[in-house]
Image (spheres, rainbow, N blue to C red):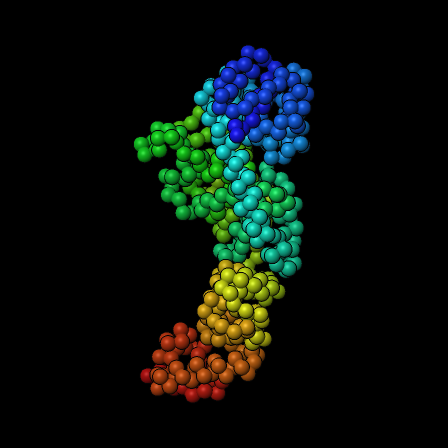
Length: 457
């Protein structure tokens, strides 16, 4: 069945021309007044609406507002007599999918309608696909630590504004990407695509074409039909600029212009494309120091830093470690068909004492490995890869206090160390290499466990 297109324009000649171009390919209904357009919109539920901004009886923007009230997902293409970026950006902010400038080129009209219809179909598919993702990235899965709760509270507030730039900072693996997705999926039934760009992984010469796309013939190796950039791909959703501190200075100036004007141009293009996505940036670098050293633009830093969300390292939110461990156990039990239901008290102590240099990502990987490779219902100390390699346990947390982690662990750890000492004929230096443990720390454990070893040979 052909898609229905509603055309709204108070100039009969323009209305006729648009209708002649579209009829035969789509079913067309038309209106010369805003009030009539709203009546037809409610009656016909068109797939796409071509709406003139300059109507006589009603402002086209007011008509757009009313249509969006009736159907938040309405696909509307605004038609304007003036190529004014401010007007276009305002229309997109109010929910328009695209725009055309009079006199409308027939090929451009058909291509724009085709693209909007394809995007609408894609969005319908996304609704189905994203429901599991929306459940996965709920804010309440991030943690109960007070710092986390305060950060999440701020994130909930800012998630309501798609125009406000957000900067997420924190160490690698701390959960910056998870927080960005939580903001993206918060409070929306179909939030559109979530597009990630790792600014440090794109070659310097390709950053602009990756972000903004390019027109046909823009450069020697350009595709014949041009290419959409990540900004266009994220329309209606979120563009996540990860590791933004690695973006070249030359590209930072253009990004600043896009954020200021809410519009951009493809490489080699002359048509302004409205920015229709939320922009979230993330970094594990100190951007303020980068600004001082001239490695990052100060004006861009202040633009992306409208709302700053700092994700604390896992070692600074130790009250979340066991909560997150239980969460990952549940996930990987389901994935691997296992039945782990608890963590032994000794293993809990080790989990809490470990410094987690890889943050939440490291914890997730540790739990995944255990659930995949081990059997049973309880996680024990010998399941933990850092049970003997304890370099990352802070000095101020009774480092290597074997007596504090329970008899079961002491017995197993002692057995492993004693067996290794036997293999090396008591040579502590050789044993430390086999155990991947510094000599002074191995000697400490030998003393604590009452074992026998001899000095370096």
